[in-house]
Length: 274
Image (cartoon, rainbow, N blue to C red; front, top):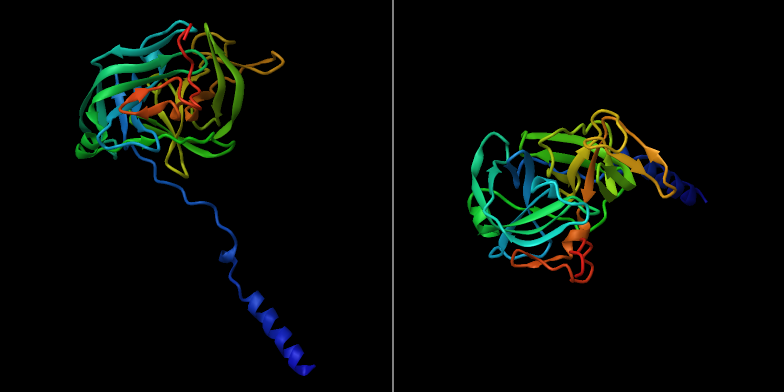
């Protein structure tokens, strides 16, 4: 009996000796910088890649569809020649690594999302040789409340906030976007941040693309998007910014710098009649 008491006492002492730090800790955060980001005329963007790729593949630059031009609400552009130039930003944001040039606009739309992808005349390996690195697109839908960074190559500024939720429909002027990501107030984006990659602060992967914000508190007008729920109720949030989820584009990227809109799981809108 005395032996049993001694054993029990030893167990109590061993449990009480476990340090508080043994409790589960929060997942580590990635240090997000300007790696992979680009600036272009009036907008931001980034060199992006799907999870599976080859260094010999032509690199892709992602920005907004409205950074190509203000497109018709149901318009989809596929494989259009382009020689657009992009400035590749150094990781610290203080300098430039060089100029990238597109060979084609492989995809662009403002229908249901606001996305454009340019194919470069430069491979992913050549981007790395310049001192850059493509940002990986996450194939997963981002969760509510995660920490994010909106990285603007145009302004060379990184906004830090969280995902505040998702919007059934976001309406701005003639355009309607589905499942838009809403930011918390700390990400008060502005003109020139359009096309910025929205990066998960934990994984370092791109989960959305920044595209708009309500500037003046107006209802559903240009530069003043409004939220519309499933019942048609409209909510206006002045000063709040929004992005478009990018995971639905990942399955469309089948290699060689091309977009296959018929690939299984591809969630990007197709041209009318296709």
